[in-house]
Structure formats: structure tokens, C-alpha cells
Length: 385
Image (cartoon, rainbow, N blue to C red; front, top):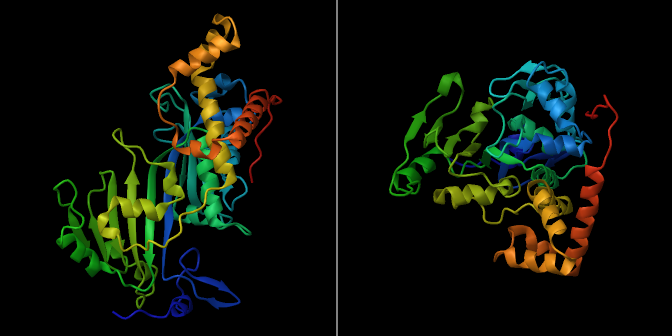
């Protein structure tokens, strides 16, 4: 199968939003492959989100969310403002009943199309440590809207989202990563060949392969490798044909990752999707090694130490205060704290070693104290777009 010129894809009506094609007056050539995050779902510490927005009496809000839900719109606006403010996403004010979570608010496009959701409330939505959570989700279209705002760099957007999630104890539950081959070099036949040669085998097991022709009336063929119920699942399909272009050679390799009780999903998946996709399947080594890992923003770097201090204050603040009251002076307290440390450093700590790191910690402590003490008038809402 011969590859068509990339400009021809654009002329043929191939979607130009984050598909390796950019049109500005005249067609501009872009890489023939690209890797994108195409679905994202996870949970955040709802108490931390509300604290960021200045809500101090969170127990009153949680009682309401577990009951009649009079404050769901305010809570949804707080979550939206903390995670998605400043993007092309909009919060639907209409309150809906959820399933696992009691309340749901849709995220919508400017035209009103659903592209994600925010969920919270209910007695069974706490983590094992008692942390109340809210769930956030972006569909494929939601991901494109999130990263595609005017005057926005999509790499910075995903780095910023990673930082925001980290600052409110965010955990990912599902991430879909898509490799788009617009030239059709790595087609469905190539996927079958890799499977037959054992390139998808793991721990001595060969995953199932299912081939579907024109699945459910959709144009284009599809191959499924693995089980939908497992921690990872791969789908390879003729994306261009699915979009309505019968002559398109555009193929998409889409890996779906799910968290489980055995394995968590790393937040870095949002900023290094190609790296994680290659790492999950050795058969996908053809994904370009030159694809640039998205640079982390300063916001993410600051969020790492800020999030660590928040965790320290919340989980061990009272214990540390007890020790402070118990020891006769700061020197004795310092000696004790040195003795209870253990070898090793957090993965992100290299950013703070040295004098500048000391100043960064002091700055994070100042911000933390300001946010803890931030007042909010009764009835004040979080503003969202």
C-alpha cells in the first residue's frame, strides 16, 4: 500500500485537530506520525480541591453531597476551576444522578457536545485511607479541546494538568494513548505479523487477537489484542476509513491502560505518552524514538514539593506538633527527625537539591500557609467558564 502525500490527507477531509496536520492559510507539512492522550479518567482529593478554593467547613459540604445535593453546582465549579479553568472546555450546570458517584456534571464543548464529566458524592467514594474523592474524565474530543485552546502549547497543557492533579492527590484510573500513522506504514497486517511472531507475548502468555471487519457498521477494519478487562488492551484500526474517507491509509494504534488494586497508573503518562506506550508493548518499538518527551512546566515542579508538604501536614501534622511540644529545644527535635529518616529520595527531589531547593521549600511553605488560612464568604461560588 503506497503512502499518500500528507497534504492530500487534509484535502480529503481528514480531521486536522491534533492529527499531525495543521492548516493555516495553506497546508503545512507535519510529521507522518504522532502520539496523543486520547482518554483520561481519574480521581482527586475533593477535600484538597475545596481547600484550594477556600472552603474550610468541608464536612458540611460532604454531608450535603451524601444527601440532597443542594451544593453540587458549587462543588462542580470548584473542581472545574481547579483542574480545567482556562481551557476550551465548559461546565454544564445541569445536575445529573451518577452511578457509583451520586452526582454528575457534564463537561461540554462550545456547541454543547458532551466531552467529559465530573462526579462526586456518595458514601462509597472514599479511598481506603478515608480520603473523599471526585472523579474527572475527558473523552478523546475532550482531550483535544483541553489541549487545543488558542495561544496554548499542548505539551504545556498536559504538564500543567499533571501538576494540578499531583497537587490534589490525583490518581489516574484510565488513560488511552493513541499512535497515529497517517502514512499507513504500520497497518493491520503489520499488527497481525507482530502478534504471530510472539512480539506481544508477556510472561509466557500470548494475548488473544480478534479481527473485526466493518465492526458494527463502521467503515474500516479493526484488530483487538488482549482483553478489555485487563490492565492494558490494544486496538488497531483504520481510523481514516472510520472517519468516512474510504481511500485513507490512516491507521491508529490505541492502547487502553487501567489502574487496578495491583498497579497504579503513573501521572507521567500524561506528559510522556509515547514512552509509556512503547514500554507497555515491546512490539511497538517502531514508535519513533525521536518523539520528544513533553517538557515539565515550572508549575509541575512547584506542585511536587507543594503536594509533598500538603501530605506531610495532613497526615503527620499533629504528630509533628506533639513531637515539637515534647522535645526541649529545636536541636533535640532536629536530631530526632534525622534519626527517623530513611535512605533514598523522592523521584522529583533532584529539582530542589542545593540552596535554590531550600528557597523553593520555604516558598512552598508560605503558599501552603496562605491557602490553609484563606477565608471564603458563605455562599460564595467558584467561578468557572
